[in-house]
Length: 384
Image (cartoon, rainbow, N blue to C red; front, side, top):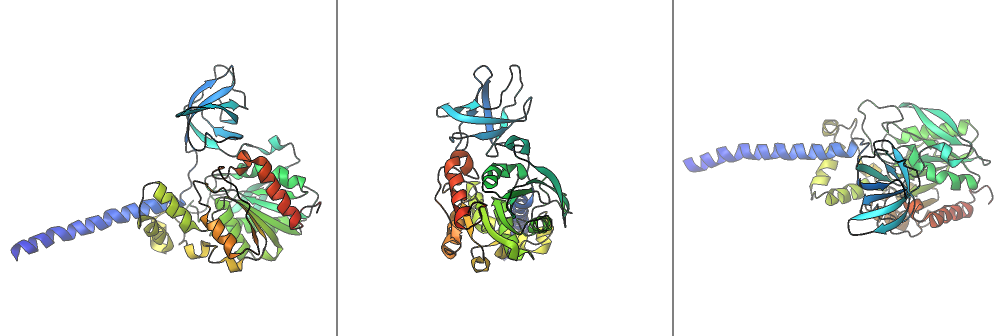
């Protein structure tokens, strides 16, 4: 009996310590979900040939993609555009530089591969204005590209990105006669920071997009389309079901969208080597006010409300989903599930190879045709 009491005396503190370690890990994972991360790197610059204007990168599933891309760098150049793949071996890829790097320029090895391509409105050679949208978070900067139609497209960027991510879509929308309002939202590094500075995964950000809808309606728009990229898709979907102006939302274009966060976070956790039940425990922590605040969130995040597959019957407008089958970051499963739940509303052409938010870069012709055809079919194009 004495030895049993001794064993229990040792076991109980060990169990409490284990619980404390587990709680710490869960809260740390939860914090990563809601904390904005900017300036991360995912590519390595091996060499730059300023004579041939080529760049050699470490080979990854992204850097080997055909098409036009951008590369965030540090040193003399902060951002360069990349063209065709010229050669590749098992470990490296050589691409054409579309932004000239001068001899003697210093470029650090760590970089970030990007699908943005355009970094500022001036590169589009279209009329544009800088505007401020008064939202509950404060004044949010936006770019406005006027066109002939009274239908405006409000574009919403994704997680860890800024509104420059959306610029690729402006020319095709402008060609259809549609005005574009490219917006920012709380905690994205351009719009005001909220009290805690954390993402709400769409649960709060939709209010800033709703303010953008109100701005559009005050400035001549009669109806709006929402276009959301990645997490911006989640924000757009929340706007569509929560906005007081939802009767003026005529349709949505979703690019590599987050339709259900549980699917995304479980997928990303698995890629990072985290196994069940850790991702679900982290989401559970974010769902309870006390542990949500301990994780850095300002309020509890209710994942049921963010699951737009289960809420599919609340959607009421036509939706175009553009999602590569091998996205690699936001799996297309929930997009397919939404298309199956609402075949009366959802159009989802098939794309593959293009990875996450890079369909324009990989297949600009197919991507443009998908949007142009859908706009005409739905009667949104000014030429329809």
